[in-house]
Amino acid sequence: MSEETRTEFDPSRYIFTDPGVPTAIRSRTVLPARRENFEVTTADGKRLVGELALPEGTVKRLS
Image 1 (cartoon, rainbow, N blue to C red):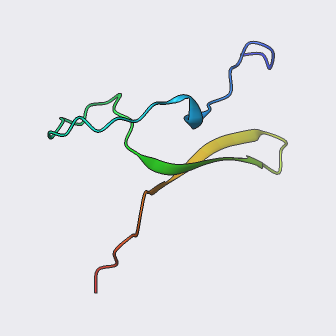
Image 2 (image 1 turned 135 degrees about the horizontal axis):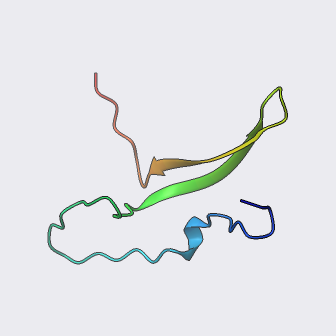
Image 3 (image 1 turned 180 degrees about the vertical axis):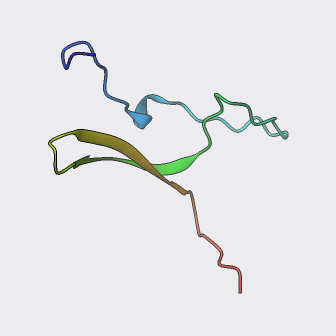
């Protein structure tokens, strides 16, 4: 895929709603999270892109 035709993933385009009732999680479900895009370049010059998604709010640790 060429650089000109590829669209960048932008999580801010998604609209998150709270239906007020439990909803089944399916393959295309986007859960609310703090999202950050990142890129890394490998030693052979390949560009890898990814997304870090952390849960919203306080993360509780198991003891």
